Picture 1 (cartoon, rainbow, N blue to C red):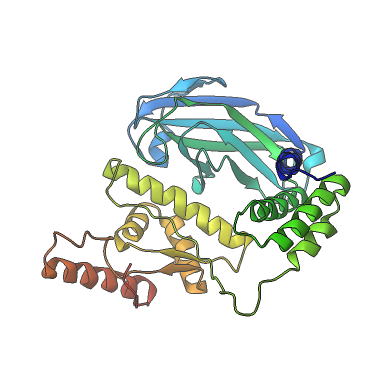
Picture 2: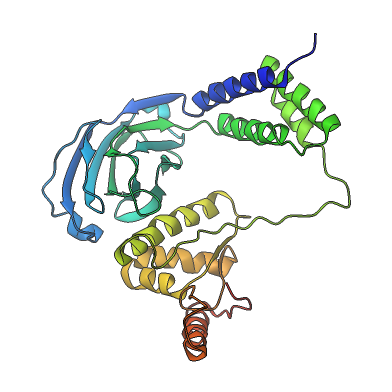
Length: 332
């Protein structure tokens, strides 16, 4: 009997969903969820003085560009002691998780989980979420709605297995893959679906390209237009969400590098969020957070005069030299 590749790939998709379900083996509803708003974009300290009311799952929020602040109360049970605990949040919008007055991670439709404790202690958790009523690209294609708000135990081994499997699954589906290796890869993944043995995936990862193949260095980057499809004030919040997430990833992955341009965005953080600014400075010093480009923003290169472009570099390079002791050697 000849196996049909599409039948096998459908089985791979089922295995992915089973693995995904193991990443958070235990979840708990939060004890309380209250909300204040709509309000303008306000600092964290100002949000503490707002009037809060009970909020419910399924509740919708708006209009476009409005801001709401949520307070989340949860309890870590005794059996979760010492384990990593995450917030699972889905609102179809961008948002920022705040813990103890610090912006710790961005949330959006593609990133709906955030670490709240690496080694949890039993007892109460107090969290805050700053919700922005917009999607990723300055619009909102679906209503902003609180679909999920839970705390959960994170299973590192299941998460790693999921992503190891998903990477190999995507490689197997690539039409440009060598047929011989593709058949071997498909057979190995199919065997994993039967046996669930991580050693099967490890053996598949031992296959390498030939010595003539390119070596690729992957560097993180977030292309945040300083002015584009959203109000300028929203750009600042995008930098907070993005930069807080990146500094968190650097704690988990010391080898991770993030290239970040536009001195203006660094300057906003320095002026408005001293805590996040110090996190960025520390990681620049470690070589993880990498200033690039040398210009104040990523300028249009059609309309400005030569003098305008020179000023971009003058002010940008001065900022990077003054704040980080580095001069960018590339244009971005």
